[in-house]
Length: 436
Image (tube, rainbow, N blue to C red):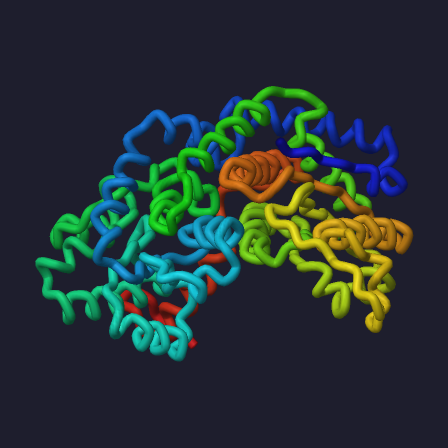
């Protein structure tokens, strides 16, 4: 299902050091599974795939899909951070790269609330002006500024075009079960409401309705996604030194403590660009606190080999690399022989593009290791709903283990609150005083 290969780290982390960090991760595992660590009131994600498959959530999402399937052209998914990254990264990974251009795709999923750029929101309003529109707004509180601003704009657009009564059929809120501004508004206006469990934080929410409803609306298989996650859930929750999440958490902590302060997640498939954005939020927000933590960055190869690849090969030796590897391509293109061979590529005749890409991946790993960059490889067989479900859960579990090993709370984000307080003060929000 998921293989973690550490051959590219062995010359940088010896066996005794690896065993030392496996011992540390074992303590973190006990802390996590025993619910004894900081932030333990946010452990609802641990059994979320299993619980969700046994609940009515899939059926609730299916009912909304059926309601919107015939008359909705565009669904605006409104959220920031984990409220949209899980769904967006999954949809982009499994969808045809040119889905929108090739097909009369209904509904098309677009996003708002992840920035406050005026031109983006103006362009979005232009785009939906002639479309039949619905909205899914994801926010526990309903007061996070970026999605709240976007929701006000989109809600006003829907109400202005269709009236308040029809707006109730075109807006779904995914929010807290009992409190918060969005919950209160939804109750008052009569919106369909789905719940993010109180004990699941945003960056661990891809297996809640926040991830599942957009995935279902985009036409993908929620159940396969959850089944893959459940299989990985069962594997991760059993202590074993060969548990892939344990191996990954141990080696990244060992490398961090040896002076490697940056982790580069690289992949060789542009469909996984947004997955890297989800991964960055998961690890950056979970570990970057108390003056600690790896700085997570992403690269997409072979594209970035012709830019940042130079730094990776010969720059400062402050990073290590985690290669997200796909064993098999879902599509096949074979290079043909040309009689004149004007481009000199006949040596590739009969090979698939996937074979060439895989050789580029292997060559890159070899070059980076020889250049002094440790490389761990996380491998899945191919890009499917099932395998991606397993991959998301694997990283969630490994992240929690890694953060506890590092000695930080994986589930809070106190540093994010400072910019919010400063912004509220500068904007003149009631209750925030500018003392400068």
